[in-house]
Structures are given as structure tokens and as C-alpha cells.
Image 1 (cartoon, helix red, strand yellow):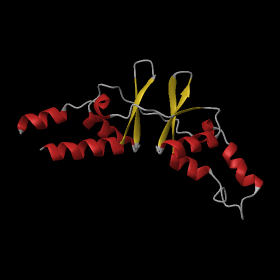
Image 2 (cartoon, one colour):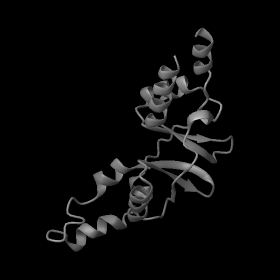
Image 3 (cartoon, helix red, strand yellow):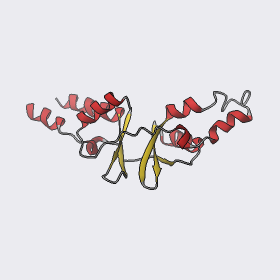
Image 4 (cartoon, one colour):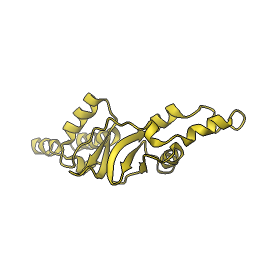
Length: 149
């Protein structure tokens, strides 16, 4: 049983990250990101400039910026629809906190807590995306580790 605990302590980001990524560009519209969220049921998309990660957009970021009348045919006005035309660079989180694929999950969790973020892009040495580590990934891993014990 002790060996199992040691193995779980050495799990790296690459072992539990979500490798399937949704990405947008800085000049894409908020509508593009909203469509990604609806289609893929993710809560975060990475913002790329070229092949480098430069930001993150969450579904909450989008919801905060959209008019509450978008989608309500009785109350929606043209200016409400214009909120969908905002550019990603206007709503994205620019304070980017990333980790490498070999960083330990425990350290990643501590970073998420201290930086108050709900995801960490996993990038290579050039800032190219390899995956994303979310709170859900960590909780899923932790639940499995507890079951294994």
C-alpha cells in the first residue's frame, strides 16, 4: 500500500491532462469561442498567437461579457447581438500561468490554488500547447487514487 502512495505522488501533468484542445485566435469573435464551448462541452479554450499560447478564455469570461438578452427573441436588440462580435483579446485572461508536461500534479494543484486559476495550459519549452490541466482533471485523478488505496 505504501508503494501505491508513492506512485500517486509522482504523477505528472502529462499523465492526467486533457490532450484534446479547443483553441481560438486573438482576433476571433466571442461567438467563435461560445460555439466551441457549446460544441465540445469544455469550460476553457486556449488563445493562440501563431503556435504559442498567449491566453485563456473560460465560459465564465464569455458569460460576463455577453448581454443577458442574447438568445431571447422577445428582448434581444441589435446592440445585444453586438456583444457576440467582441474579439477574444478583449475578454481573454492575459495573466497566463502555465506548467510543463513533467510537472507533478501536486505542484500543479498548489499553483492553481495560489494563482486562483481553474486551469493550467501544459506547454513545451517553446510555449506550444500540449494539453490543459483543469480542476476536474485533478479531482478525477484524486478520486481514482483514493479508490486504488
